[in-house]
Length: 137
Image (cartoon, rainbow, N blue to C red; front, side):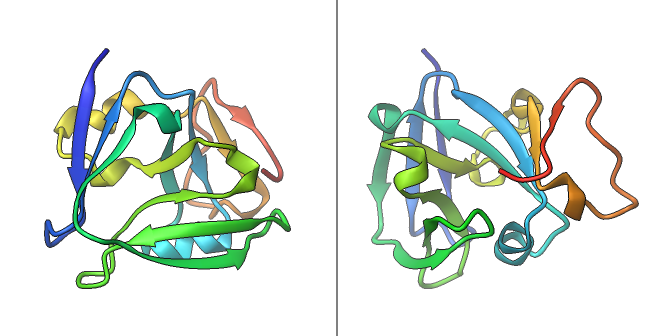
């Protein structure tokens, strides 16, 4: 099983993930736009058993997401980077923001199997060929 490490922008919070993701998705919801500062987020749903916080003490913020369920964002209190999200919807699993992984190939390995909230996808971002298109979560 491959282990990947990642960090926030300033490097104070570090994580590792072991094993293959359960799934990989792009999310076009407003929350994901806001926490990434971009048109969508690229996510790896990772088993909680393969997740480790290596260093730092992330801050959290909890809110009701577009799905109507509570979701918790874990982010660096110094630089603001969101590293992962979790909540009851995901069980013990962690939603890793793929861009925080140190390995340049991590994003290539995170080709989305699905897209969420495609009704909110900006019109200049095309559908990922072969990915399942979901109007909501």
